[in-house]
Amino acid sequence: MSDAVLLGAPVLLPLAAAVLAFAGGDRLRRGVTVALCAGLALAAALLAGAAWNRGVITHHVGGWLPPLGILLRADGLAVLMVIMNTAVGIAVSVFAAGYFGGHDEGHAAGPHGRTALFWPVWFMLWGALNALFLSGDVFNLYVTLELVGLSGVALISLAGTKAWPAAMRYLFVSLLASLSYLLGTALLYGQFGVLDLAGLGRAMADVPAARAAAALMFVGLAAKTALVPLHAWLPPAHAGAPAPVSAVLSALVIKGSFYLFLRLWFQVFPVLTPAVLAQAVGLFGSAAILWGSALALRQSRLKMVVAYSTVAQVGYLFLLFPLATGAAASVAPLAIAFHAVSHACAKAAMFMAAGGLMLAYGTDDIRALRGAAVQASAPALAFAIGAMVLIGLPPGGNFTAKWLLLSASIDTGQWWWIPVIAAGTLLASGYLFRVLTVFMESSGSAAPASAPRVSLAAPALVLAVAALLLALAAPAVTGVLERAPAVGLPALAGGPS
Amino acid sequence: MTPALLYGLSGALLVAIGLTGAIASRSLVRRILGFNVLGSGAFVIIIAFARRVAGPVPDPVSHALVLTGIVVTVSATAVALALAVRLGDEEDGRHE
Image 1 (tube, rainbow over the protein chains, first blue to last red):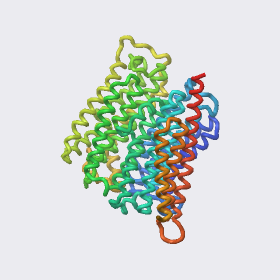
Image 2: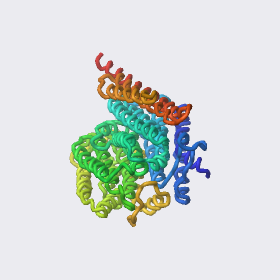
Image 3: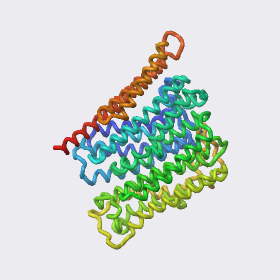
Image 4: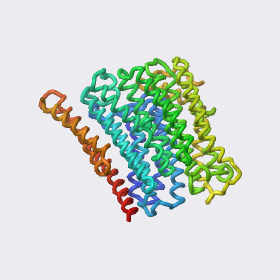
């Protein structure tokens, strides 16, 4: 299989499907959805197999070389992200078919009602995320960032009137962040005359333009990743969106901008990212873990708890920078790979479970969900398993991630991250057990207005269990990261096995 | 002062004006216009960099970038305006 197909298919299949889903009727749309899920699963598997056997795969689109041409490349980290995007995306698609198919409340009927618009926009977002993970030049990455942001806004606005202010706010933050990133790109091109990540990394020098570019790009991407203190837009947007959209935004979209942050940090700007800056980024991450969790404890709506938990979980991702910057070998990148994938599966499962409960009970007010463990056992179980994973209980993926982060802290003598990780775990237990206790209360439990549907709970359960068993995939994750190493990331030092 | 520098400074000025409008305005439409000015400022800066190559022909890559960027900002403006119109209708409905 040619590299053009291997790298092009994960991007082009969803975009083609988006056009078909927009132009065609309901029946065509259903067929397209099934075909797309199968096609993307196959494409991700082929790409993973190729990277496993041959290492990093690259392709110059149309045969044009940089700086004019667009470089696509898949290393181990990109392959993992594409697999995550594909797996979570398929589960969300199955869920969305049930979610939008079964109820009409607030969703206009007809082929081009709001519900029908979900599919083309979601496919666009799906493909744009794959493009983000596979692109190798900073300008193309700007385009993918905008595609992801704009389709995210459109998807949030599908929830109807109440979600529009949150969607507008998300749009403004997203645009400001992208333009900040674009200005950084302009400065880099003006200074170095190249746009591909590899070329920029080679040419990088400590000059004022490069420093300004780094500041503009990192701040823009931190805002898009909702790193505290730039997080205020996230909870209303993620909690106000329809449940399948919440799942996609919290599980996948956040990872896109973080992934780009990571790429720039290790591949493009290593000469401009001294240890002291890495410590500062780690401090913001710690603040996110503590502050996000503290706010999650105070929420009265289930979806707001899950959304604030995303603010907290994003914090762990940013601990990568103090732990891995400047190291020749580190387990921190492996920890972050585990955390990103595990959080994606668990968080998507929890938002889908919350959506299922919301449809059944007509509200996501936590007090109204008394006895859900019995009355709506399937979504409640999916939520509980996702919660176990997020807290970091073994054998969930977050357990592996936290274990590796702790050992990286000890290896590098940075003991101060250990109490942060411990406190984050305690707080997560707090805000999640607070919900689970209500689920299990029998006194005053009310039957849901409508029976929870299995078709909604099944994809949530599958993802939650996948996150719970992620530790079993450790050899595969370690293997692909070692066989197709990402430029600039420290080598993996020992695995969990 | 070279023309390229003049263009670069004008771009920076546009960025400053646009940023002010995008952040400080109360009206949604003014904020969206602010984003447009901000984007145009960035594009003017990129075009100014087209003179970085020696010789009579400016760097074509800058122009390709700006053309792509314009398409992106037009789409962003369309999404923003559509949302602003709906929000406006919503508010009118509430006041009536």
